[in-house]
Length: 243
Length: 243
DNA sequence: ACCCGACAGGTTGTTTTACCAAGTCTGAGC
DNA sequence: GCTCAGACTTGGTAAAACAACCTGTCGGGT
Figure 1 (cartoon, rainbow over the protein chains, first blue to last red):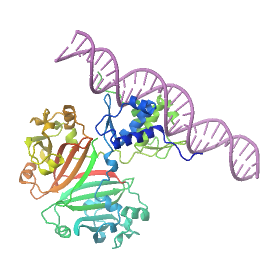
Figure 2: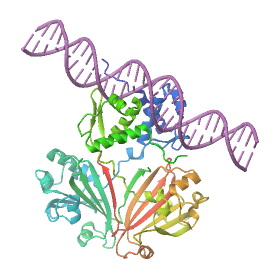
Figure 3: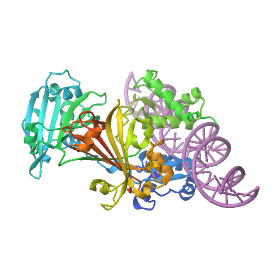
Figure 4: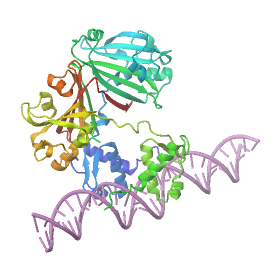
């Protein structure tokens, strides 16, 4: 038997067209060759061409318009752009990767908002781990992480030591939970006196507060991350295709 | 002519199967009827059945395995989440759909930030259209739209009348531009005296400011949208799968 | 009795030919 | 200048065939 298996023709066509788009042969905004032209050039049937073009459209490389043709959009924006969602990095990377200091680690009664995001009764207790992240020697972000007490048991999150492992990886291996999606809320508010002091910021500039509720596939809340950013030093940037 | 158009057969099949999965006729984990059975039951050809099943697989409803069959997975988790990007709605829907009033429409010299997002020399002029959007009779959002002067010529954006058509649709049909993707920046700041007055908000609560730079496939900036939201009344919410 | 391979019949995956419908553009003819 | 026919585009459906894969059953061999 042959170990090397040839990919199907339509998949080969997809790759060929992707290469041409990336190399500039088909620049963004231009019109792709028509189905008939592709049939002649690659010596395949129309359904094969259509299958390849459908894949490209669903991946965002091209845009089709009945009666006119197919337009090149370029390499899909979301594919390469690792969205720098705040909190994502904190969940994925070890704490030892970024400078900063642990300012709190223990059981607390979380705010109503956090309790609601964790879907736990208010006034019950959760574990809080809070870290002041520094950049250029100055404190820049205050990152807080809440999780139900039973999820913190048996993990290294309760220790005062910086984690040598990403939080997601740690929780997955120790507790067997699977992160699936994140519900994100962005708000702005004025800092409390303590926050302004910790972050070394004036009291009259607002804070960007990003809450991220991490859930598993059945929408059960696992952890909540809050990232506090002084608005005079940080802003959030993202890019997405128009639908 | 008939305004009601029948959806294609494969789309009807998709909906029929989705309903059966949601109603429990095809419970998760069970085996879907084979292609041949579906062909007989719905009286369609095999390509039509395959097209419907492909859609269901790509959307995460089912899982297929060559030689065995197709397994039901259930309603995909992320299916119904439409991200309500601020500004998206303003670009897509007619101004007459949302209550509010036009507060400004004319050529201005935009701020450095807007000029930079439009990639035009600072101190050159752009067209500004600003609208105060109301909800429950109270002003809630201040939406501003800048675009290069040449892109505003020949459009109804320069008139003081509310647009009866989505801005994206209007610009596409009048000027032939194609919206491709949006680069979004989110910041927080204190309102100016005029902004606080227009929005009817206290001067000591911050504003969430969302800038959206709309670009075409070749990354040429087309328009810039700014949405100002009083942070005590609005927040941004979004959901996305973890990678 | 047990094991193992061949084989038949089921399944999905891929490719081809063919035809019609619907949207867009151009140019001939009025 | 205007309209409309025709050519070109993509979208959808049908019918057929072959390939690849899985799972049984029916053998023959140990």
